[in-house]
Amino acid sequence: MKNVSKLGARIALIAAFAAAGAAPLTAQAQEGHHPRASAHCSNCGTVVSTHTYERAAERGSGVGAAGGAVLGGLLGNQVGSGRGRTLATIAGAVGGGYAGNHVERNMHSVTYTDVRVRMANGGVRTFTEQGRPRFANGEHVRVQGGRLVR
Image (tube, rainbow, N blue to C red; front, top):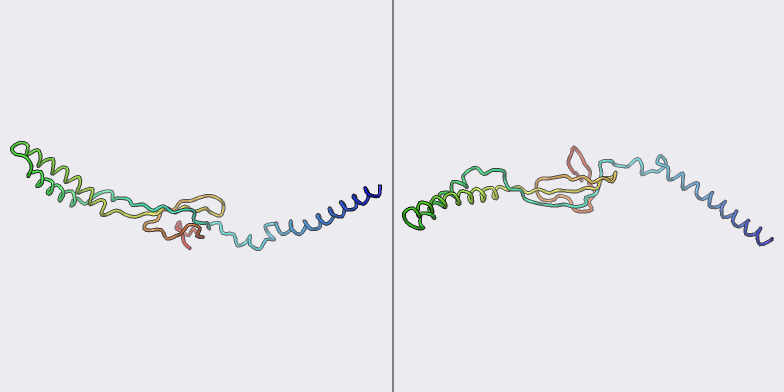
């Protein structure tokens, strides 16, 4: 019986220390008591990834198409004779115009970067910026006026 009472006393003592030790921890965990809770930034986040790509211009000015058509027509005119020469000239002009327009659009392409940010609330937002990446993975950023800032 003495062993049971000693064991009961030890358990009671441990429970009393545990209850007394837990009280200050629960008080610190309250949001109003925590000093960093007021510094929480709802517009802040961390860069998760960046993806850079180039987008060709929507339209060319026509200069590339015209130059390509002339060059293609001249090259097509060098092939064949009679009606074959006429068809080759037309095919060269059409193909050259298409190729010239495509080259001109690629010359005026624009670089964009998609930046994925994990926000403080846990959500992920993607921001598209023109140009090369300004932010590295893991960098802390803030959203200000719809744009990312350091």
